[in-house]
Length: 280
Image 1 (cartoon, one colour):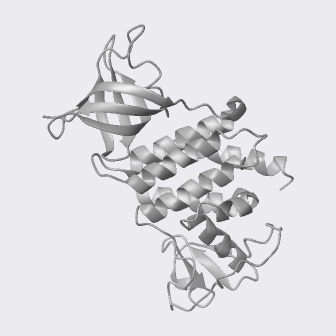
Image 2: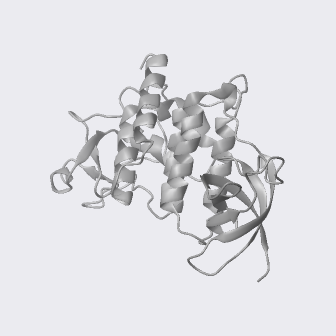
């Protein structure tokens, strides 16, 4: 059986023996693979640095039969994961991305779009604070989550009511810097149904289970974060810190995975601290 060469993000490393480790890798052409790296723990190993968590590496592996570990034969480090200023929040955010990729993907099912999204997201986490491209960590996390949902076929319905199919949201985003009225439970005309993962109007919301009060602006913001365009969301990064979005995302993953993510409490705490820092 011939060996395969691919780019890969290291998602998980588990000690296998005194000298070897088992890796979970998310690759650009083969999806998620689990591979044995013999000798990776030896001093001066040829795998040094290339099998660290969240490293981006060029790897060569030998596929094995279904149900058994592939064999990693070579790994060359392309980029080590180093969050800007060694930020603990961005370190946990990187681990959160790794947890989502681990739990949401199946072995040997290629997801090239999701791979590119993950590489770009980890790169954004490492952008220095002095850079013009620097973005709040919670906004980067929200962008990854919204695009991942869309790429995996779970995109949110953000234009029409899931009950009566009535149009609810205009195309253009109203020009404003305020993020305080994204959630409008008392007087709002529309809601977000957590069970339907879609907007509902006031007339239909009683039949759609658990709902969150929403505003048209909130739906427009989420559409920007869900859209394929990788520049538009960056102009509205401050909105990505709003707590109603964190509540929505936590519920979506709970529904899809039937359990909470291990790092959900850390991401919630990170979002709260960031909101306090900006006076939200």
